[in-house]
Image (cartoon, rainbow, N blue to C red; front, side, top):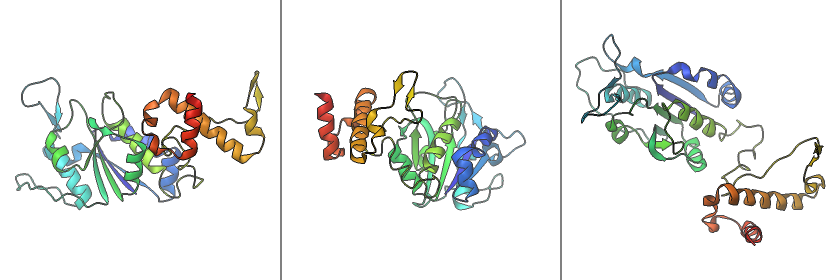
Length: 258
């Protein structure tokens, strides 16, 4: 998969691409991460990327011209237009490409969204700054607007890192185990179960005895129950649609609630 990040702070991503899962995925040629300076898609020696908002308001807005050019170049290979040339809107990219504006106004970025993006061949991630980006970008050249949470960041760069990390770990061959990404929070409509490791007893705190029995069916039942109990405590909204759960989970949930 190919990620193309459009930002005014390209150095922000240097550490991210050289550590952890993303680094390993790049070394295995499973992922490419290209970071592009938005200023490279401007004309004029000052490389201006922002301007005052129409209608009057505080702050600055990222201009449409460099963002249009960046997306068209990255998705269609269209070279930069010389200054004064007729500016036309390139056709939207095909279904193998997602052009994502990272914004608090977008729909929530969930595990399901990560799975959807992981099936694409290319994702262009546009990092907003200041008061946002010109709406014509979102309405014309973008295919998605995503938000990583109900809060406001200084820019879309941290959100782009979150999206790339969540998507990369879903790609075949990235994680060490083929089931690692399957047995995680949200995939089964609930949070993940608690985990323990050695030592079995530490400062009077003992690992639950069932985990030491080697009885796989009992361990699975315990894990399911603990996961449901944690979900009910911290994310009850995930359990609003009980039909998403299988029969065993529904029975365990009723027992917990009793």
